[in-house]
Image (tube, rainbow, N blue to C red):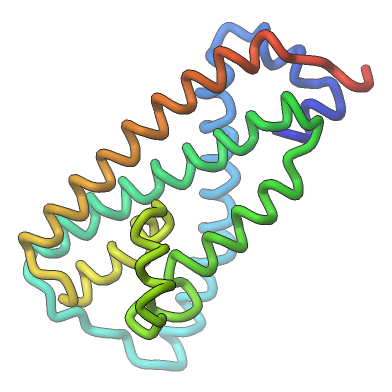
Length: 185
């Protein structure tokens, strides 16, 4: 979104007959599907050709809860990115804000190191942030590290974060519409 503000193309995006948020989500969804099809799928095919296919000892209910949790995690990260992108209306560029968010995400989502290995104080800080709900918790559901009751609690917490981010996003968007400036043109 920051690139659109800098280039001035955001002005034409705002007058399109579709909401700006829907346009941005569809654009990002298309980009992610392209990356998935041309990066993740070939990597998995190559991996499975040389390694054994991993088995998942999960019951169908656990797999369903995992799928719901993954979808909620995707929605959460989309809203976080969109919300941070809206800061470019004030800053002109959200690059550094996005960079810090990615660092926090990598630290608190459990993508590099599972959160089980973190010191207690760092784990406590991470419980107040939504990042663990995007990657770590869905995987914990599938791996059986979370019981079914805990999985429902995680999905409810994801729903809470989605609602909170939506409210915050609406408030920031209402402010951003009055603050827009276009650089370039």
